[in-house]
Amino acid sequence: MPRPLLALLLSLGLWNAAALAAEPTATRSLATAYGARLKIGAAVEPEQLADADGVLLARQFSSLVAENAMKPLRIHPQEDRYVFGPADALVAFAKQHGLAVRGHTLLWGSHTPDWFWQAADGQPATREQVLQRLKQHIATVVGHYRGRVYAWDVVNEAIDPNQSSCLRDDRWMQVVGPDYLAVAFRAAHAADPQARLFINDFNTQEPAKRDCLARVVKGLLAEGVPVQGIGHQTHISLYWPSLAAIDQSLTTFARLGLENQITELDMSLYQHHDYQPPQPLAQRLNLQAERYRDLMALVLAHPEVTAVTWWGVADDHSWLNHQPGAPGDDQPLLFDRQQRPKPAYWAVLHLRPHE
Image (tube, rainbow, N blue to C red):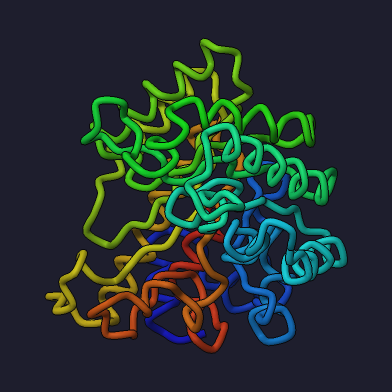
């Protein structure tokens, strides 16, 4: 084991020198360490299953989510055509390796296929046509995976604190109105009553976003809509946000009796849109380990948090390296570009949630 990594682990009090020297890293896994306390997942594309990321996924994780293969644009590109093959490959891989599967996502305003909004005569689809298509889409997709997907992000990124309704002013609001959320959740529940149903969003730790999300969810619950959990994407960095803000958000929804999940976790080594960090890389990797350790300790203090899913398996495949202006060298995950464990991995592994 490299000396800087050993020094970090010792400084964090995560392990002792004798144990580290003797431990066979190939036989240790996050899935085993967290056991029944948390599902530990990663987002993946079907083409990764046959390469080193697939090996790492099967060895280290206890669940997976489709990064893109289950999104409406991919799985239902035309009204009379579903493309289940790529997502089926992920579900089959999960079954082969004993992994749970999260479904992502049934409705996402910015990823709704254009045909949803068009009538056969070329005119705009009516509200009734759109709702019928939504119900059919959800019934077909959730029905296809019934009993094989334990949780669904039913609605993704619908919250906008700048709107009086707290909902994005997108086509769903403009054509259908706010009750599209209730329709989506009820359709998902009807298609698979055993699946856990989530509303998923980013920046849920920001007070305005958190409060709007809570307002929307309270309204749905008051109507008897089967919302069972909140998905907190948690795309964060070394510098932002505070753990206290994340704690407050988790607490807010726990008090509503809801399940919390961290659904798209990664931790950039950069400040948002600032690619000239003040610290050298080695120091930032150590800071990343400390922050991941502290975040996971916070999660373990919340018994209603049932899963933590990283948005990627290893640093060789991360959406952060494909953003406009990004240098392409970010390292936001627990494993490096060669699928080797980073200091952050050891920090997360040795929290020992069972103690």
